[in-house]
Image (cartoon, rainbow, N blue to C red):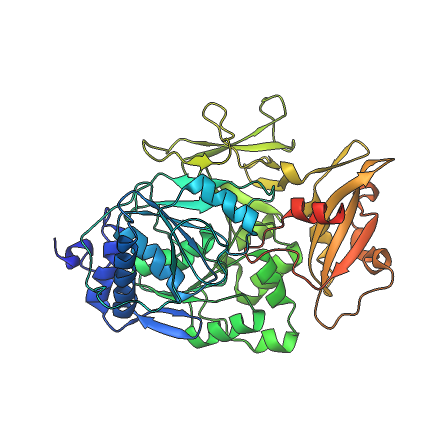
Length: 499
């Protein structure tokens, strides 16, 4: 087949087209058109494909063959995306993981994945695997021509963004070919997207790596910065952007004269997920760009089920994450596996009726939560009478205070209503009387002095939650409480405070 045969008459990817070949097909069709803007570099489709082809041949020289696993571990940079496509071009399985892992965590994951090699840079923790350093100049002799079509199955392995601290990798059984699992109604073909998150997570994968296979221009930040994000929106005029609530909050809490002056009119879709969004922040964005453009999704890398809610629906049902996607059904179970009626809190399960053969995920390093035809992310919540879902928190994050179940997300949302607060995390610490007491870790906005009395500083916000849910102690920090993907590693926070 010719490269052009993998695109339809509109230049859009054909179902079944290998991901690696699609980049070459767009390079042939679009040539010098901009494909990627990242880290001060701008690459055309032709340049990005040529670099990916050379990198693929370097991986071949290290012994990478179809079906082999390749760990990709580095900060957001052009070579990260080149490595993803280079791996697919060989029919190998990319496994992107965080470069922020400590050596012991990295070693555990390497032991679970058993990769043929690791692709990274000076930030990558050391291991015994063959290592391709992307900062080393490409030796002569590695051609930039397209490679023969190849398909990886599974298509990728992604690391979990969970908070338990236990390494877990998710095998995506869908091959590395274009299909409905990779397309999105909220990310049309041939647009400009803006990604602010780390590339080893699922949402940046969907909004930075996949759009290139559609012939879209992708703008990606090396690291999120609220002022920098506004500048990129004005410069590149993206159609679709993806953010996590922490990022949404940091933009919204910039000085009003800055946000009022920013031109955000190009944004047709603001896609957010990964963590609960404080209601005040959600309303700020709805007021700023329009309710029809703010879309929240609840789901996971495992694709066991999902919900979606538009801004106008959320205004009618504040706090909801929406209704089940077509083909999915939400079932709330108690601790004994009994189905609960609306308004009763229990573990959220999905029944995915549309799942077909060869689309069932698997874990490396953990067990699934499958119960018959039901599966769960481990989150707690309830349904209203119309089938709209509300998240309470993750089961592993729940704190039992004097026999009462407390969900930190509710308290964190209240604390973050304070404009001087950027972010917060609430954890349980041992208490002789109550079993556990609530402790709040609060990240202050730049320029805000640390209060002498933390509980008094937050009194207005904490007064909105029940007395037994109020933290007994508060600490303030200038360090990020959440990671770049908006996740809180509560296990680590708790361990640090327990010494």
